[in-house]
Length: 137
Image (cartoon, rainbow, N blue to C red; front, side, top):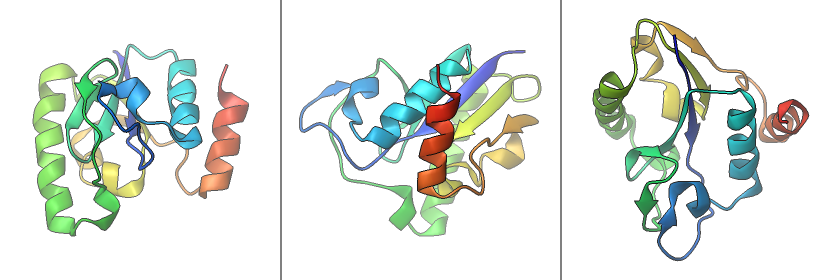
């Protein structure tokens, strides 16, 4: 069983092409990535509103798109694309998927995943940041 962490993209980005891990420059993303790394996962992916499922070293261009403002039908279509990629990369029956991602980024994914965890569920942004700071190495 592998442990896979999925973290969501954020609004604040560089203004030029970069690796995905470097593109997102907000403190929230930096703490999300540090927290994800502290979980000692086998892999970490970024859930990008524009690019879908990203590896940390995928090179991308900056963009302005978020699931938070998309109609739910579009979020469902985005989730279907993510699931198609995830099915190729992970064992949805055996692997543990940890979501460090907002509700819209995980809502339609969770029903297809047998073993998952949402450690920040129910916490406001400030409490999420504190939790990630306290639990990162």
